[in-house]
Length: 199
Image (cartoon, rainbow, N blue to C red; front, side, top):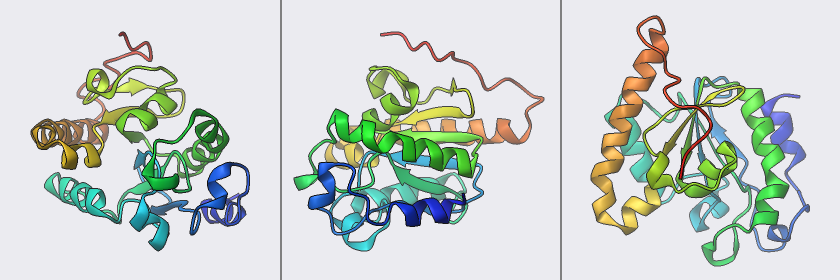
């Protein structure tokens, strides 16, 4: 199965309650062979209307942060843990995440990125498999079985709390360093942290 075929197979997904309130499934967008993938929480209003993740204000900030380290959205792949917009942009519920998680993991497997950047608590906890807050994990690398995980603050959080913009920019500079090390792996090891995140 290709990434496009997986997306088409979910076009009319009815596996959870979110199907009843969505405009469309927001599967993902970007380079299907990307070395770096970004995973957010769930589609918002603009994403639900346009069918693409991160096209609202948070998406604009994400684009600016990417450009600040020399990346374009065409080079990466962007998806969300949950593929349908929760009502009133509420947090996705555990059973909704559980229902959608296999599709996210299949996306990651098909794209096969070297690095997955999780944006915010829900994406980070889903991919790390641990209930640890993003503020304790951000800007670090965690080796997963098939990829390296790099948790980041969610751009929406930085929009709502202006004091988070500086640490978010700092984390993207760390991301730039991680990407440079990926290109020159003989210099140093990326696996600076195990999957055992501590409270």
